[in-house]
Image (cartoon, rainbow, N blue to C red; front, side, top):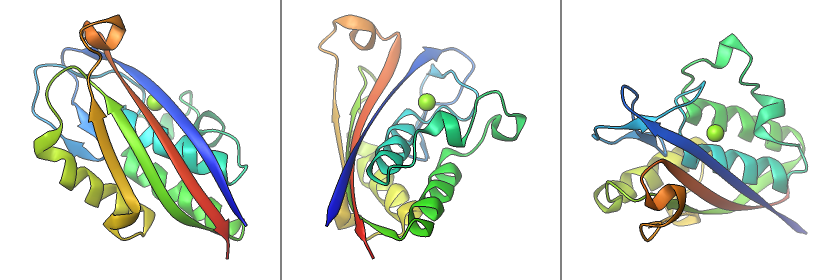
Length: 158
Ligand code: MG
């Protein structure tokens, strides 16, 4: 028996912040605003994982009002979420995710992001897929105001 979950997140692009995507810092003049490192892709993956396991959402597990999570490394939050999934008697089958960002292009970083997410999920990189697309210059993503991400995770009973 396997279970699937969906995740979605978006963060605003602002000056003076780092652009961290899937645990990889990407050089850019703008970064993502948020309480933690604002790693939008990893946040979507966390929500997909929690969703698949029936464990609620990222806001319940890591509230943005909690000072412990200020500037938190979201890959560490993903590792913590994985611990909860395992404690529920489940294991992760695979994760697929899509980043929607106008600029910069993700291509040069995609393999490293895949490896970082796979490491945090304790999975081979072949079980973690990372895709990227743009906002086609329309909407908040297309205007470069923010970045969005979607993810799907599948888990099954151990
Ligand atoms: Mg977020």
